[in-house]
Structures are given as C-alpha cells and as structure tokens.
Image (cartoon, rainbow, N blue to C red; front, side):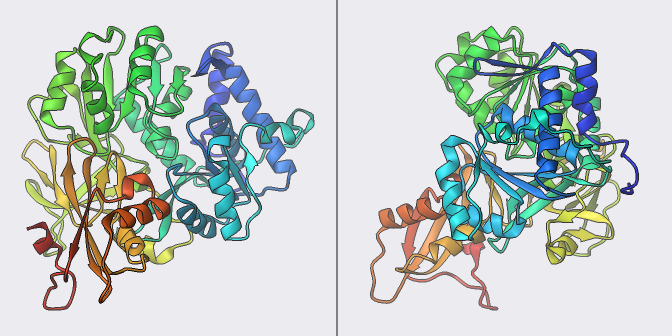
Length: 500
C-alpha cells in the first residue's frame, strides 16, 4: 500500500470499530482494573498523538521490556494508529542480550515496567542509549490529553511489530510483521478457531511472543471480546480465573498445560465455561492431550513460526484422536509446500521435505538484515528449516528440524548462542550444545565443554556464568566436561555423535 492512502487491513481501526459498537464493554481485565473499549480506543489515540508530538516519525521503533500489562496494549494500538513499530523484548533476557537488540533495532524510545527497569537501564548504558522511560507513567508525561495532532495515513505494508529472535549466529534478529501480516493471520485464525464478542479469553502467553498478540488477543479485541490479561503464568491463578471470570478459551504452550494438569487442583477444577484451549510452540504429548480431553476441554493444536505471524497449520479438536501427532492442515490463506532436502525439488502429493510457506501472513524480512532475509526465502517461499511429512489426506506431520534450534517451555533456543556464551567463560576452550528431552519444558540443553589446557572447570560456576549472560530458559540443564569434541572429516563438531 502506498503512503498516500490508508490501508484496508490496518490494525488501529480494529479497536476504534469495536469501541463504536460496544464502548462500555470490558476490553481488558487486569488484576483489579477494568479497561473498556472506549478507554482503550481513546487512550491509544491520545497516546499516538503524544508520541507524534514528541517528534517520532514513520516506522520508528519503540522497545519495551515488561510483563503483560494493559499499558503495553494501549501502546501497541497507539503505534498502530501512528505508523510506529512496537518491539517488545523478552523480559527474561540478560542485559547483554538486551544491549545487542538495542544496537540492532536503534529505537526512538525505550520503555520498561518497574519490574524490569534496572535491567533495561543497564542495557541502555552498555550501548550509550538514553535510559528507559517508565511504562506505568510515561503516557501521562506526554500531556496527551491536551495534544491535538493529526494521525497519519497508515499503509497495509507498514511495519507494526518487531519480534526479536535469536539467529543461528547467536546474534539477535528482528522479524518485522506488517499490518497486513497481522490482519491475514488473524483472519485465518478466525476461520478455524473463531472468537465471538461473548468470549472471555485468558492471556498468559507473554506479549514478547508473536502468539501473545496474534493467537487470540488481537482477534478478541477485533470482535469486542474480553481479554483477561495476566502479568505472568500462575497455575493457581488460572484455576481461579477460569471459574470466577467464566473464561471460555486460552492459549499456551505444552508446558502451560502440563503444569496445570500436574497441579493438585486440576481434577476438581471448574472448567464448565472453558470450551477449548489452543496449544502451540511444540507438539502436545498424547498422554497430556488425553488428560485435557478427560476434563471435557477441546484442544486445538498446530504449528507456526514468528516469520509467518505465526499461524501455518491447525489441527482441530475433532481430528485430535484420529490424527495423533499431526499438526493438521494449512490455515486458510496460507500456502504450504514441501521441498525435498536432497534434490531441492518440490514434493508432489505424499512425501517428506522442508516446510515452505507462502501467503499474506509471511513477513517481509528481518530488520536491517538483507543477508538473513535472502537466506530464509527461496523462489518466493519462506524456508522454515523444519521437515514434515504429508499424507494422502493432506495432513502434515513434523519429522524434525534442519536447524539445530530447539523449543524449551515454548521458547526457541539456538545452540550457537548458548555455545558463544559458554566460550566466554575464561576456563572453557570449546563448547557444543544439543537438545535433550525434559519432563517439564519438553526440551532443554545439554552442554559439552572442553577446558582450557591445564585448567579445571567448575560446573556450578559455568551455570552461574550462563545465568548472568543468558535468559533462564537458555541455560543448559546438563553440563558435561569432556576432553575433546567429536568432529567430522571436515573438522566440524559432529553433534550426531554427541547425541549418541
């Protein structure tokens, strides 16, 4: 969409339209606060004007570091209306990791909640950036109610979200999602997992995940539903909220549902209002799926990735028992192909290959990283790095990954990033990380480290080092000191032999 006209698929208009239909309906319930659609629409408009009055221009970035909060939702819609880009950073990231992202995204503003302000302040100081503003108070400091600034025309292809991911080099990348990307992925979601104005959506998935926006919350606000927003995931709170607030649906990763199912309250919990739950991030174990079905709750499964905004495959609850282990079929408006790993040819009908994705949900590329963008596309298709098998009925089954990335508690972990941090330890010469099964997180890391000549490695000290420089979910759960690492004839570390 050109800059001379407003787009048809821009997201800022969603909240305005919902406010015009049901201004007094609750859009967000957060702890003891109720935010109506009128509140959210008027507040985000005034905030958008305030940001523009401060001199922020088209496509400038605002980074945030916060737990789930309604202030960030208001900021999101303000960015949508002002033509700005929101970059929510992972609140588990270390100051070192945050500094790398600040260098990459060059934000116009950095904003943090009180809980995370010190860490973002440290990151800003590491790169010589201006200290962050307070999420809780910065909007009022703009004197937004007295500012009258015309909002710009926002285009469909303008950036809206910049979701940080770790790359195979261990350096951060930003997946840029446009208004059109977010529109179409939610349109697809609504055709498979619809939400109505009568739904009450519980959001425990963090807002630094693409799923924290594009898997239920944005669709809920488009439809005029209520989102019960929780700052963090707490099983006891989930049981209480489902009962007291009559929650009808929620989204989580397998670990979310495992921790709930293992809780003493699970068998007697009141799930009478909960008609379905959505799971993503990794496959749902059959035994866990059965536990939820026994409680009368439908489980919708699927597959996605940030670069696809994220929805690609969906397996409805009606297929869960007959297609155990499948991720289902592509969403509407999403094209999928399989590329033979050996020949590079597209696989026809039944077969196996790397998953390729194409459609209006697919991102335009990584922020200021043309090489990484070029590498992730082939002939107009997004390369996922994941291998799947397609059966005669058109169902897909994930077979494995071309990439080494693994998923720990719903969080993507790239071994190369962990290896880089391990090798920063003064006593470590080399390191290699592989994924292993974990009873709670699904997968975790096992690190093999080689000590510097004549020096001993203290495993506890290495773990402490990792916790200082890495998000908690990236810290290996097992560390083994070895004399050397197995290598291929070309000298590359042979991780296949490490896996045994």
